[in-house]
Length: 384
Image 1 (cartoon, rainbow, N blue to C red):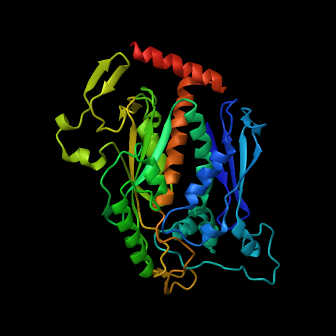
Image 2 (image 1 turned 120 degrees about the horizontal axis):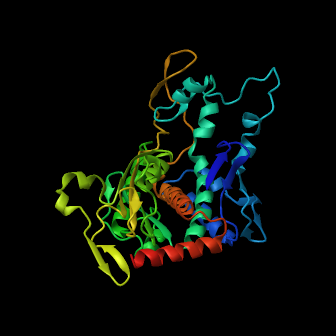
Image 3 (image 1 turned 180 degrees about the vertical axis):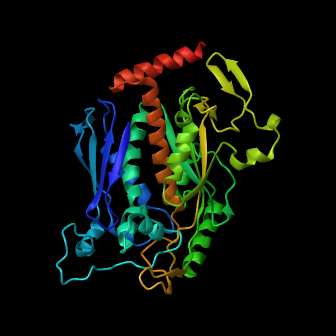
């Protein structure tokens, strides 16, 4: 299974193609729409989220509410495009018109300058529009489909915010505190820490600054053995790591106890193996449900650090690529903090990678065959 997205931040919309989804999966469109709405929420979001509705328009691969096995085609309209029609039109401009809203002052922390150097763009808007985090709306749509497939196999994906702007929350199991997390404007399981996070966001916004934070994604219901130790690109943790780092502004990833594992002795971090009537288990889960590139059957725990959004209302110094003079970087509409929304995006990308690895392992083209293969495998490993 694979996917590809296309479209720009202020273009007509985002297009998604998902190829390899098994046939026979009943699609809950309301559930998919809820996922899209979750991405738009979160304390610290900017005005753009008041404009967009992120309605999913399914244009192929689904018929009468179920997948056919053909590529799934989706379109997400950009409502804000009405204010950018001439700026983003595909047709050539009339010769007498200058290119509107040209960007020649690259913003530190963005793809603007490096993308311009790579593709030879003198108008850096050609970079900005595609590198924008607006593309993550398409990824959430993809993840919403993957989640529905995983749910049919008894697998669920959760997320929560561990910290924002240096305000750390005490760890609480996101599975047990999902209602609290979903009700929190910052998706934090601890209400007191969540309140402090919001106060920190307010302070940063008044200063024209932005905040990053840390997010944890947890996957439950996994069977052991998904992934492989045989090749680097088949290892489950390496694939998840690549996927989450590809999301805008993500800068580090860890599994289980993450960086803390490097500070401890081996006897305190390895997860001892036990056995009972239901099969093999681990006494602990310091390694985050993955050993040797494969799932152990324990919950998969992924920690991700997100840098502060680089678009600042107190802009940093840059250089105009035409005049080479020093200027402050141009300002594009942005959020003060997108960590809560990013947690929803990260759920989506992790869900997709898990689904891909499972389909590669069991190699089926219909949902009922997939469910039968997974059930047979679970019984096989239980009695191993």
